[in-house]
Image (cartoon, rainbow, N blue to C red; front, side, top):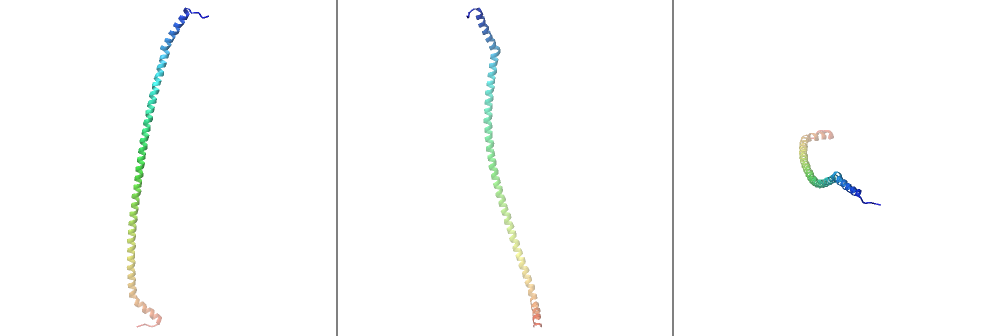
Length: 142
C-alpha cells in the first residue's frame, strides 16, 4: 500500500528542484538554441527567396537584352547584306558598262581595220584583175 509521509514531500521537493535546475541548465539553453536556429532558418529562407526573385529578374533582364541584341544584329546583318547586294549590282553595272564600251571600241577598231583593208584591196584590185585576166586569157587586156 502507498503511504503518504515526509519522504513523499521530500521527493516532490527534490523533483521540483531538479526540474528548476534542469530548466536553468538544460532546457533554457536548448530552447534558446532552437529559437536561434529557427530565426536563422527563417532569415536564410527569406534571403534565399529574395535572391531567387532577384535572379529571376536578372534572368528576365538578360533575356530581354539578348533578344534586343539578336534583333539588332539581325537588322545589321540584313542591312549589310542589302549593302553588299547593292554594291555587287553597282560593280556588275560598271563591269557591263566597261564591257559594252570595250566591245564598242573593238567594233569600231575592227571597222577601221576593215575599211583600211578594203582601201588597200581597192588599190590592188585593178592590178589583181589584170593579172587574173592575163592568166585566164593568156594575154594582156588593154
